[in-house]
Image (cartoon, rainbow, N blue to C red; front, side, top):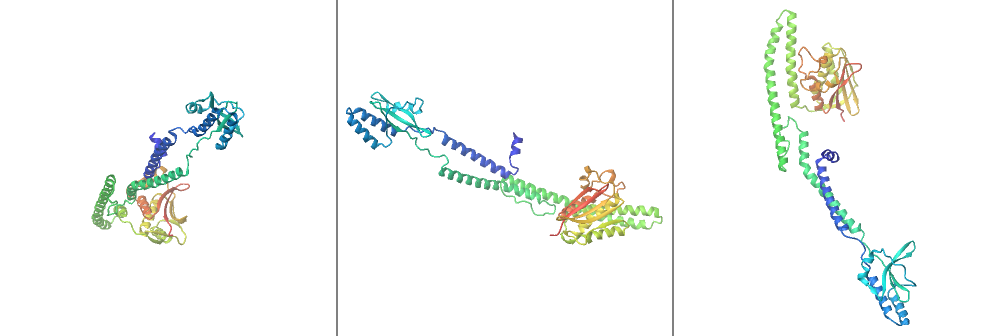
Length: 437
């Protein structure tokens, strides 16, 4: 039952409240309407006036012994009651007529001549009449007309229903909006959550439950901000403190005459510097978003590729002359550097492409390395995750932050990072950012 209700109920709490309120009131209204309109019989009331007129006329005529006077009385009765009929003979009685239940109590018997209900043809239908026999074999009759019924959907009823429906809908929508607004503010505040915020996310006002949720969310934000700031300050201090001994070690290593011993030491010191700087940049990048400016993307990517070419790496580069985006240039350069560096480590050939696709600019870095299994693609974007053996670094020169930093930069610039398989093998790391409008 619960699963069925979850399937048929709307997903928004405001809509659920509105549906429940309207349903409850409609059910109550239908129940009241049923009792009022169908709780009692709507059978037509007996036509007392017509029958009383017939009985009175029959009695007067039957009581007059003079035939001439009876004929005159009959003519006078027809003038007084235009609906009064004089039949040459009485029709057959309708024994199944429901009016038989009240006629005996109303008229009884008159001089041994009964008053009964009969049906006579009237066009394609039949007409119900009340019949009273006369002594000479003829009969008096009057048509029986049912009293008019008030229509169920009269203008008054329709107007009342329309007004009630409009009032209920407006009231329900207002109530749902008022009840759901605090929850909507909580959801919006959760979406705006950032470790750089200094002011509370939510105003601690409203119902008790909403105030408690708002206070808990504000306290959580303050704790998270404090925790990350403490961690960043600690790593910054470690980085600063390590820079001096690393520099001293580098100077001492330069004095080593044996090249075979000096080169590995210098390489290890460079790796230490890169590891510390990468971790520090990642943490500070999360805390200090850079303002975006209009940037011509191809020259920016060209600059990064030239730096790698100057370092002796072979890169292929393909891009249009101009393609403008709104981004943080230094951040985006760092993301492209990370992608190219990652591709050079695992592939022998690297190609960098810049192109537009719809409303986005795409920066693609393709290598011919072993690629990344589909099950690993999401995980390699997580901080400090170093993937499977095919693309892992066994010499310890990475914290596993390159792709994570690139993804964070893409997101901060309104875009995304995708990892796509290259053909026949290899990997395409693609950064998509919005084009300048």
